[in-house]
Image (cartoon, rainbow, N blue to C red):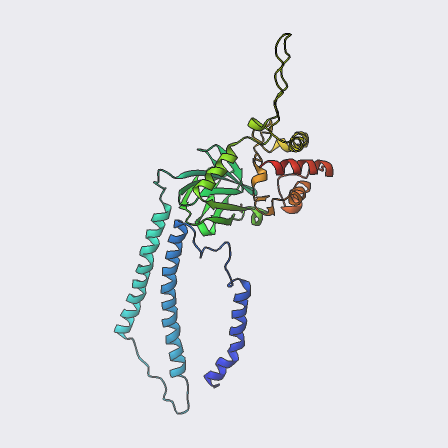
Length: 369
Ligand code: CUA
């Protein structure tokens, strides 16, 4: 028989390869979508539970593997070694190895059940901010019913305040998941699921659909901007406004015909500069004429489609196309030119627009802050 040290030496390259593979494939961190770096009360509960179970798993591993190694080395076959003694049962040993795992299971089960109850009950916080989430193939719609805001793929939340999330789907089953906020809840058509958490750090947290929902499931991403109460209020105030160029930024109307003898009223000044006004007017025309209004809504204009994301403040978002493209004029043009080339199976059709129209639309959409 080979000496055990020699055996160990020959196994070393295998250990090295496994360790290297682990390092290369993802044990390097820190990763933005890591459930091991909790940023909310919910995620912290899950992490505490995980750490507790991991602790017991390490103890079991060390005891079992330790006993195995002792047995392998101490009782290995050697020159002149007597053959093993045969025994038929040992009551004390058998009772102990039944009771010890049962105890460990109790120590795991109690915190597990406590955590499930804790995170599964509806929130009772009267100050909770209600957000409705609707999953679509392949993007996220976020509604703040108490604030009158509708947005897409980018959720803003005030840090330290309970967020009460209600989830449903417009088509197939999706799953809402911000790993650092905890949770992961199925988003089911015709059924409302619930989830709540309180973010404890400020930052931008990526999330994505976690249930296979079709061809572009992997491209159904989203972002959560967790910010101070003041920054959140500022964002809300901006989102509540109608689109730029309408409402209090609308072009002044021409004065009505003035009867003889009356003073001619002073012409009102345009609240927007002429260059921006030209972009908005041309873009609005292109938007109406290109078929975009069939699916998209821009508050304050006649565009009132509900199939696609609300674009009232699309220029203020960090990303487009469900978190997969940066919100830049180049990427916006790429998306409008051929959505399916960016996101296979996307419901938004390529409208075969000429480059001038695309430029006009991009300038318009980017100005909708
Ligand atoms: Cu939606 Cu996967």
